[in-house]
Length: 289
Figure 1 (cartoon, rainbow, N blue to C red):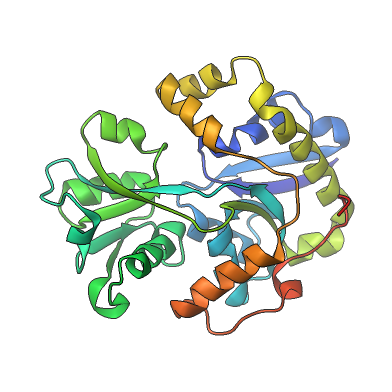
Figure 2 (figure 1 turned 180 degrees about the vertical axis):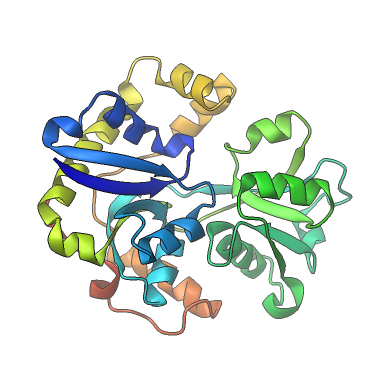
């Protein structure tokens, strides 16, 4: 039995991994999968990969590309969710801001530097033609709970987070969503530490085969919408809308997508140099191309 430590956000995107654990699909293939919740998001996961606290991660595409460019010893193995992640732009319920343009020069709450919430603030600034040096300010809040506290106390003015995860907070009047900002590429990838790839490639293939078999059939599981709504305390209609717009995949990361991510990060001066695809992606050749 090979032990594999994998990190991910405790959100509905990762429910397929829970199914694999619950049904003992991994153990039946000789894999002792240890799921590690990373509520701090991308920044927490990339740090855990660097410090050898996890072997694999289900991580935001732009976050892991930036981390690898900064010499994080990891590689992208495959795309996990093909569709973009739709980030909601949130303010406190009693905030005076009503449009995204009102946030120019204000302070964004971010989980940590290099996180998705941090990088997407730059993407939004670019989209709105802001001066990134003058018009962006940040307050580190660690996670979603920190974002709630920071906006409620007026320590930060806005917070970008996946819109369906935060929908209950909007519904109950803690947040108000004033816009959204989708990623211009597939949102989640599966990444692995270089050391793990080198020493445990067979185990890695087994993990991917299992999770890919689950995601292929995920949307057809009877009452999966009701199950997710209950587990994540979401409205059924919100879960149904999310399922309709979300597409899991079992394919490798395309070169075009990697180029779009790198070009965006280079434009924003969030990475210093463009990396060869071989530095970002490891092809296990487990799927016919």
